[in-house]
Amino acid sequence: MNVQSKDNYGKRVAVLNSTLALLKEHGFHGTPISLIAKHAGVAAGTIYHYFDSKETLILELYVHVKDQLVKAILVGDDPEKPFKDRFFNLLINQFNFYIENESALFFLEQYMSSPFAKNYPEKDSQLFIDKVVTFFHYGIENEQFKNIDPRLLAPTIKGTLVAAATFQLSEHIVFSKEDIIQVINVIWDGIKRQ
Amino acid sequence: MNVQSKDNYGKRVAVLNSTLALLKEHGFHGTPISLIAKHAGVAAGTIYHYFDSKETLILELYVHVKDQLVKAILVGDDPEKPFKDRFFNLLINQFNFYIENESALFFLEQYMSSPFAKNYPEKDSQLFIDKVVTFFHYGIENEQFKNIDPRLLAPTIKGTLVAAATFQLSEHIVFSKEDIIQVINVIWDGIKRQ
DNA sequence: TGTAACCGAATGAACGTTCAATCAAAAGAT
DNA sequence: ATCTTTTGATTGAACGTTCATTCGGTTACA
Image (cartoon, rainbow over all chains, first blue to last red; front, side):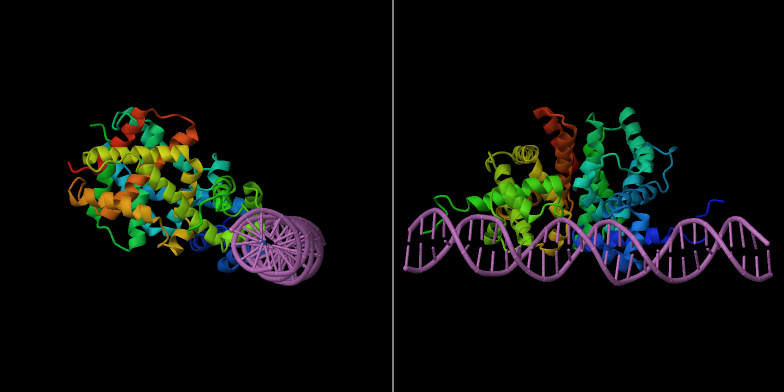
């Protein structure tokens, strides 16, 4: 008789979404709990029913957003297809997620370069570890990539994608599908075994 | 009779350096003015002699750090040398600056993905605009680079370098000179006109 | 003597967090 | 079916703390 059916945890998600939206506008300092509460249509005390503190709210928001990201990345992935095709599909998905979820991109970047990431290095989406990390291990072991340290690979790729997405968002220019593929080609040319 | 000779502005720089060091440990929220004052060996009120507010302190810190970065990047640059050599020299310098100034790297990244960068887009080091931006314009106009949007170039390069530097710093592994060149080759292979 | 640098206690606003009270709905009792 | 009890989600005012900023006074120096 596990009850999570009807309605519940709607407010939890509302709080997470409001926090995400407000962080982009005002940053961590600058978005008080009271504002999150008002934005989410919830009383301040309610937030403390779902989260122990403002700090854990941020930590759980990180895992929440990262989960969404991974789900978006994996859309249409087919292990039967050639590695390069899968690679391009994953990166196109990731790019699209970023430009469709600006506040998520902003938050993830901010989180990563904040004391949170240093203080809670173990906090991450399990889905991310299971799926995405595994994919790149495969690419390394099957010698699709240059012989560079594998742990360097992911941040390198992410760095370029984030740069491209941030560029489009800040300049309000829309990349065509071809433009995006060109950007991913920059990454691919850089890291593929030649 | 421009006075900045003897001693002065020593405390201003001390405050900037302390702020930089403390931000890395505690983040913006989490480093009160009182702590900066104590760390810099200065009274809280003194900080307000040099900076209008905590906010402008951060803004001026950004320009200050960016200036140091540009000076470090330009060491040994020689416009007579081949473009590729200059490119590699600049990026090696940038990488070295990052790993020798961890708190600066951390701060620059945090600043860029914070509301500050959105709210004060005009704030930047004049030296950076004059020298570094100019260099890349040259590379684009003389067709050294792939035909991608020039504004995409700088963030792409920075993204990879930052990824590599962050990787070395967090994993406490020391890249050899050859490793660094390999990383820069990833960038070069990605963006060069082929 | 006058000016600029400097100090640090005082101030007042803002904030995270607590908690006693309310309410709706589920479970249990008859 | 009806009433009673229990549960837990929800509220928002109140609390105590923290913090950025101010300001009256002190020191250093020209």
